[in-house]
Length: 386
Picture 1 (cartoon, rainbow, N blue to C red):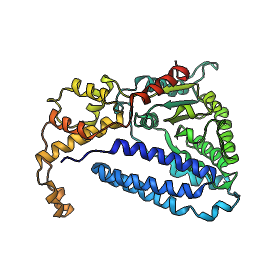
Picture 2 (picture 1 turned 120 degrees about the vertical axis):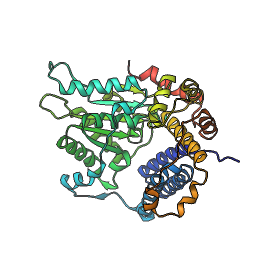
Picture 3 (picture 1 turned 180 degrees about the horizontal axis):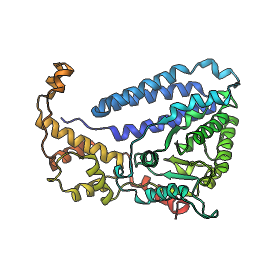
Picture 4 (picture 1 turned 60 degrees about the horizontal axis):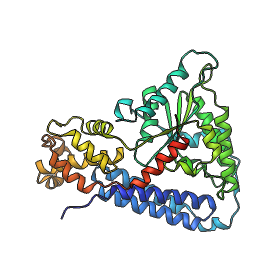
């Protein structure tokens, strides 16, 4: 019996557990936060078992979540926020690990033409001499289902521009120390200006800017206010350094109205259509012979199955592994050999066949439903760009 690929549902479960961890941490429910951190680690280990090609990456992330869980002490529940006197230089130093080297180019992204166009135009206009009234966008909000390429778009913006890329998950700028979260935001943008041109990517911004109709802590409100101040104060172009903020969310309906007003450019990053699906397949199978594939049929199936770009990438990876196992029946036996010996050997490959993908479709499932997609489309109609 073939093994069912559960990576899609597991990724969705992980994202939900991570969001619940952030909410619990902000509300002060550290017992729940600890449980959710451990749940994140457990899901990542399952992903490691289910995704051979990404095993080491998922295990490394699982180890980090274990450390997060161990760092949460139950006695913190009874303690008030601790006052901190860390200076801006110290805060900047603590944020330098958010800088990520990216080599992603626009050509590495299949589809998403509208989102790419808006970001490209913003970057170009920011660098050109222009009338004072012509102003580039200071912030761009990317919203859509998980796995559609929001992080990849931000990476490409930085990679193509050779800019400093700050990959910021919101939990990295939330601190247990009194007043420090807002100072971390200020330090982040100060560092971004020093390292300009910079792209500040705020992932899962909904975790920071939940609607004010919901209960939020004073610390969270101060952090949100600090972010709004930074966004209002940004000036792009002229004598000012380029610091572009790109925010992403899988739940745009949870965003605070104050945040929405700072991101007039709200770009829907949808599931890929047939054209985009074909392009993603080509990108994910570079270096392999795909002359025997019917890309039209594969792309149609991807659209019918509500595949995100990540799902298509996983599909191609699974198809490639099907081909590899077919051509290298006893590959696992080579695990007995030393690494130097393996380096002298060559993997047997053949052109990818439709059968490789048919088997992959049985294992790769999208966690999305048609109702989920309709919810994004309705929000886009009401609040999206254009």
